[in-house]
Length: 192
Image (tube, rainbow, N blue to C red; front, side, top):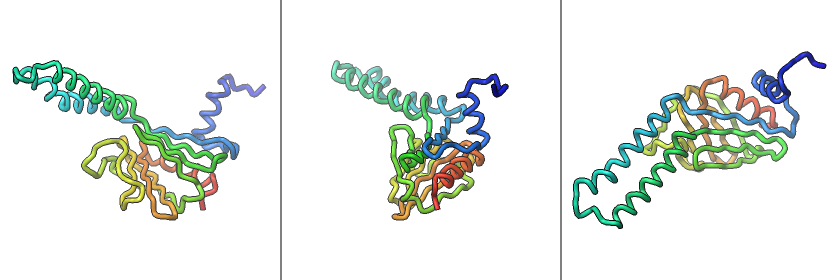
């Protein structure tokens, strides 16, 4: 008997946080969560986007038709779905799967697998946590572009993954310690 009263799953999580070695076949998963004000921002975006859908029928009598009502309801439904995906349930996940020899990157409406053999460099750096383009969505950009894909919910550090053929992903993490844990798992998976 080990003397540790915690269940084995809780003990495994504690060991994982402490940096205990995992078997080579096990996947190391890291989840970046949204900061506290992220949901309020989403509701604000929904309110601003829905304003024309609500005001148009109220201010323009000719817009009070069944077709307009159906189109407005459909648009409002799409906005609510995007709000759920992008703000209320927003999570970024980085999973280093040694058994499959891939790193999986997941975000709202985004998922990619990058073979570990394709990675040329992984670096940890400080970050401002903001999107640097016109689109303020948690995932933006293209892997083959100069800036690459940027996955961010806000944070103070980032892990930058670059492949041998020039593709790039930047995952913004909550803090530098989390970014260093992701980089360490990538290094332990055999990245050179």
